[in-house]
Image (cartoon, rainbow, N blue to C red):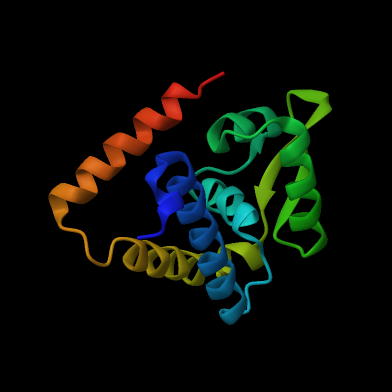
Length: 143
């Protein structure tokens, strides 16, 4: 193992870099024309769409300004739409398009491929422990 991996911080950062690049490669190979960041937004919307940007922001743990850029790019390629909120003329909701709904099986396939690669040599107990540790790391940085 590389000497810099003595640091868990560096190891985690480098593992995430590889995860990002692998995800991007699979998304490109699948012809989905989305980034890993956009994948997170689409995945969340596939579980629940027609929601405000504030609710989506909470669901994907991104601030509104970062999310607005992702929504702009997804809207340009006709994967999401901003629609007027029925209860407030000043706001809008984010909804999936038919195009993105049709891509759902391919999106989930790519996500499963990434997860399978990531956990390739792990047993079930290790996966449970990894999920627990990553969840705690995430919570520790809740600022």
